Image 1 (cartoon, rainbow, N blue to C red):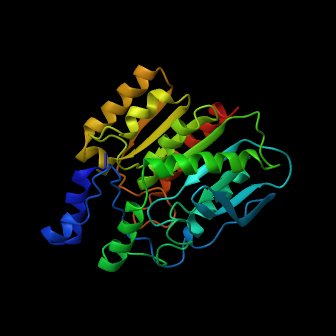
Image 2 (spheres, rainbow, N blue to C red; image 1 turned 60 degrees about the vertical axis):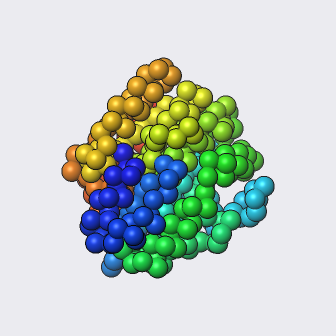
Length: 298
């Protein structure tokens, strides 16, 4: 599911040399090589208005520094909190728009810049093309800056921030979701804050199952959440064993999980500004996310 075979596929499609390909491997299961962002006007180019929501760019203090983020929530009342992790292209209008849409469904949503230790958002050029060597190198350097340790540190800090907000109902569980590179971070969040995380979703998550001793799938038994794992068909074709390992891990931990391959999708199909965005399948995944949160964050 988007591990080393994905790098082979990306190298073929991008026509990079074998030596260049060697520089792409992360070696820690952080394995999401994404398509370029879509160009031209589209759903991801601006934050869509959601009725009766309030959103703002904010700063969250963590043990490793000040993290820039976007916090959006319904205009009144206290609601279940959601921590959203973006893909390798980082915090940008598309993810602010997705967070705003989720807030419109009744959640207090924090979407973060996972690379705040290195630089503030935006951390990728507008309409970034992963096939462009300087862009690719810069994005991979940012991805290399993250680790299981940073994921745990950030999970604790961001959930603590959410629990301190008047818009958050702390009697309800917290949800978290990740895309591509941040799929593993969502699982690590559930392990780091097992007492608070009630629902986890990953969309075309990269490196959920690796051979490393700290593979995200090995943390599932330490969590107490319900799961949605939405798998790109292209990822599953290259690594169908990952799906089976995940399914077995959830069963062994006796956790409710929906693990599904979304027919016809390419890696990166969910963000609205992705070049391979699949509207129908993304909407299906969104509906399953709402069902997950409706049950897991009640």
